[in-house]
Structure formats: structure tokens, C-alpha cells
Image 1 (cartoon, rainbow, N blue to C red):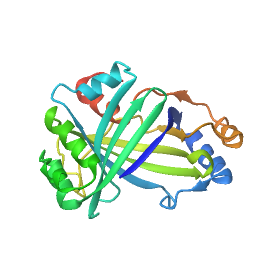
Image 2: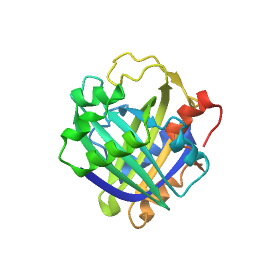
Image 3: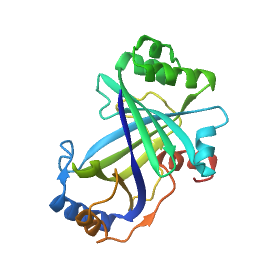
Image 4: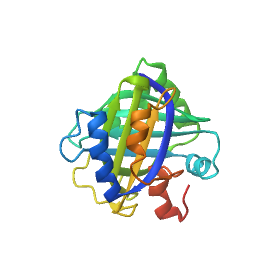
Length: 231
């Protein structure tokens, strides 16, 4: 299991500023090895309770809340990452565990028993939560990401675009999954993650563009299309 605890801030920026910011960040930070020319694709299947408690906790702004998801980077992949993000005041804790494709496919169908076959205590914890609270697949979210990193304070800056979703099909590995946009195509989501404090030269790069702090998550953006509210 991988366990990360850090501060995380989200902002909305326009596409033009996104291009400017990518250029500035590329001069002062290392690009993620997966970036390529256009970035890399992330696809996540989010789970929630029958009464959408995780969604509503986010909408209500609770200080302690969580999200559970399966994440892949390629529909042809032979594995998926099981992740749980927990909001703890200003910090986000993210724990993740690699699952085989076969086991991940069963989770996509609402069968969580494969988690009992993993020795990591995190798998048993997620199984208990999902079984006890009757978690079910709710939505798949996909987007294009470009990421920049600095080893100091574990700083990671990401710019996400082409955010799309579906609630009609929960098969995470389907290559041509029909999806609809959930964010204005001329807007991007900027995420800034760090431990301790942000370095001044990265702050200066970020300050070159206009940005507004964003409280909404990509999961909530996707659910808001069908539920008719944002949070």
C-alpha cells in the first residue's frame, strides 16, 4: 500500500492561461515522465453509498470525508489502483493498492470479495467500509492530465482538461466508453499538492495566471450533471 498525506488546493483556470502556465512550470519543475506532448489519460470509477453520502459530505463541506475509487491509465492495462482519499482539515490522505485486472473487473460489478484475498490491511478496511455501507459504482470520470513535480516538499502541480464522465456504464476497461463533458471545454482544473510549504519560485510561476479556488471535486462535477447540484 502507498500512503500519502499532503495539502491539496484546487483552482479553475481558462485554457489560454493553462497553456501559459504549462510553459512556466516546464521551466522550473520536472515534467512527469508520463506527460508526453499532450499529457496522459486518467480514468476513475467512483463508488458511493445508496444515498450518496460521500457526495453529500463534500457538498456540505464536512471537514472529515472520503472518496473511494478505482483508477487506470489505459483501458488495456492489466491492473487498476484502488484508492481512498480522506479529507482531514487542510490535508488530504491518499492510500492506494494495486489490484489485478480480474479483481478490479469484479469490483466494477459490485463484487468486493476479491479484496479479502489481499494481505494488505488496507484491502480489508476498504472491503469492510464498502460492504457495511453498501457502496455501489456511481460514475466514471476521465480527463487529460499534465503533471509537474519538485522533490522538495513533495510538490506536485497538475493541470487537467477534457473532463468527461458517464453514469451509464461502469466497465472501467471499455476502450471506447461513451462519455459526456462535465466542464466547459475552455476551462481547466489546476491542482497544487505539497507537504509543509510551497516554494517561492513555484508560487511565482503559479501567480502568472488568474485562478479562482475551486471547492468542487471532479467526482462532484460528474455527479452534479445527474443530481442537479454542485459541491
